[in-house]
Length: 269
Image (tube, rainbow, N blue to C red; front, side, top):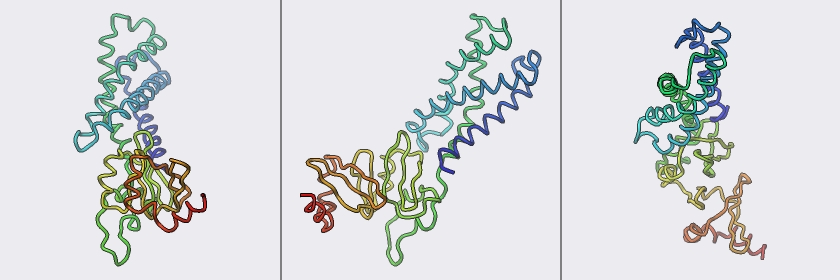
């Protein structure tokens, strides 16, 4: 199971449990006014809609307020508070459908307070569960260990590689607020910013070749040039563009001048 599918599964399971508990308890008068079946529909709609909205807000806030600079609960609480605004309108509509006449226009502000309390009570613990599910498993010994007989420097990023991707790190690329990590065993997503990954990859034998890509030197199969455009063809079949900003650094590091790459260039010309 990938990190993304694991996070979705945890979200669905946690939301289903929360919906069932709220339906059984029946807070805010729903126990007296609604049957169990109607309460289940009512609270399931609220929990899932609100959970999706909290996730969207958290998606924007968590990378900017990432631990350890902020406790994880802080961006999740802000996301819950922000999500309470559209959730109030949704609850108002649900109240009109399930319990007509219970809530009027003048009750919007108190309704927002009730919605915010429920949202904050659910969004922080549920968000932390989903976040933990989205963290990569500890790296396998094969991924983290240096080559036999070599005293390789510590590369903290290798510990973040999911265990099922145990193997040689080839490339890291940005994908929205995530990083897609490519190894000889496949690829998967982890929640991290590229700038932080580059700090942890400083001791690795590789370079940033584009604003959205880091590549290991050993992953480069050949270099292709088409006019002013340079592309790295990796051993796993991935093609990575080289930006003009990083071209000089690659040339200085000898990436573009190896015998293999010189032959490729000569054949193309």
